[in-house]
Length: 356
Ligand SMILES: C[S@@+](CC[C@H](N)C(=O)[O-])C[C@H]1O[C@@H](n2cnc3c(N)ncnc32)[C@H](O)[C@@H]1O
Image (tube, rainbow, N blue to C red):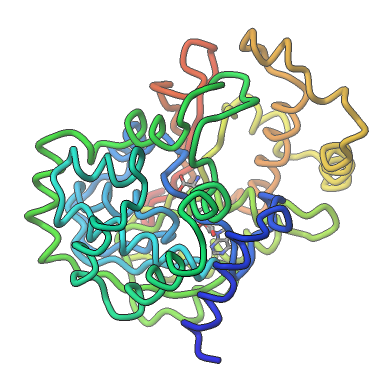
């Protein structure tokens, strides 16, 4: 079986039998696809600015690439453990190149994957990407694809902030810049001059497969996924990946080491040096649905930090202790969307090479 045939087979399986793929932490070669960023990229891109041309970014939903192009990046290497993300990203890029903003929004969020529009876009896709989607549309109905093959697509049911809201569209509108009219037009004109390539690669083996060096590396919140299994030393694996990738960073280049949801400097300072055993015990609680005490919905709705928040902050801070000799900058982001008004702030940790 070719790589494409395997990808199609696995994508159909996910669309048809999504309940087997519910665990969001389980990142595999074939997982559900992000339709959008869930990070406040609009707020953090100014911290990653520079006279930068080459970037290494997770394929994810394609939003990181679009935002990097707006910052002047012209050559992008995309990597992702999930082989399926590149098929969607390529479809999204073709849609932006060939549709007006209104048509794009309609194709992505309203009349999702409308077949006549897909047929119109098909000639702008590579043969593999076109075959992938044609096979999907032949074997699954749109509802199966929308509900099962994607994360967060559709209206939210039990979300403390966003019940009844289309989470993906919400993130796209609130957290990115490419949907602003002049940026959308800029991208349409710029795409022809952008070089993009894709690697189906795990973060831990990524650096050894690269021949190039980069001005910008963005690891989004991959750390959370690397660190998701209880008795696996994700912190050390992640730390080693960072060190390996620093060798692929050009002088003055920047790396966004991790995006931190609702985590502040105080958390990093407070929890950063605690023992891994403590982190593992907390993970054990988190992964045990019978322990309800961590889910304090009332506090959450009031915008107070719950035990769950503290747990995340604690876990997110753990790899820091292995990188204490690096000059890592912390930037707090203004909440413009998710959690806005509830007092939660996301933040990022950024390393710049040659800056001490
Ligand atoms: C970290 S996720 C989260 C999405 C992110 N919050 C955003 O705003 O786009 C982005 C991508 O990273 C990929 N990913 C997760 N763990 C990975 C790993 N260990 N190596 C490579 N890619 C990984 C996922 O498959 C996903 O497509």
